[in-house]
Length: 361
Image (cartoon, rainbow, N blue to C red):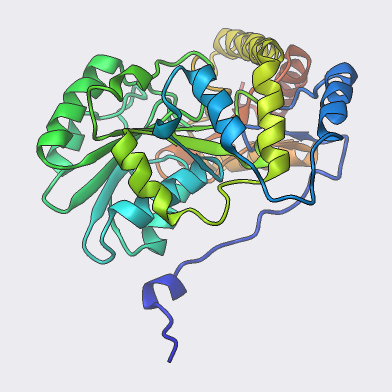
């Protein structure tokens, strides 16, 4: 007899709307790379993809070796996942007890933390932010109890780009280790400028790092990420893998861009220039904002739910999509992806016109 899990039945999941068929729209709502790869690099990739054998199952050994060499760590410390989402799911599936364990993460943050917590019937504990957009870091110590399995620390987080330095991470890792708690550093936005805890893996066996090819690499469509941890922990987590961690095309595309990493650096720099332009002009106009240093996004605070809702709707009317709907008090603003200076200029000019029309400025 099959049994439906009550807690899973209560989980509400919505399909993502596909609006990207409109080539004239500006989609700044998903923290994606909006700078297209040039024809030369796409032709080079296409030539490489022609050589792959789609009739065979994936052979991932070579990609593990390449990723290992690029990261400068043992390949036995790496586990491929379906983006950072898959990394979160793998950790919760293997390292928690449904109905008993609790996990800790910031609020607001990436939506899938809460989704997977509900999926595995786990209790959630959250850390909030102060008025200066700083994570109330020390609260973590008070939240950890005998049933805490994992502490997730996005570094940087989204939509608030607060950064936790490595000294604080070391101290927290030691505290978690004594209490048999895993500390998971979400580095999905590395290498936009934030610190990395990669070197801490050797000393702290209870640390995991999650990364993805979605943000800096601009390859959200291939749905590929990876977990980094101790050999023992990675070996244990890999027991729940499906037949193959990923597919041939995704691994080959990721491999191609590791070989052509200078293209990634070029795109990162272009996004950062666009963000610098936007931040400069927002500050010049006395519009409060946060971010744009260690991630590919900016949060704009309009200090009013009503005004924010009006502005988001008017931007949408202009076919400019941003991300709102954050929990209080951040429901007074919206988050947008960084892009080229041209796109950021278009967004800023559109925003100013809207704010003037409603007499905000």
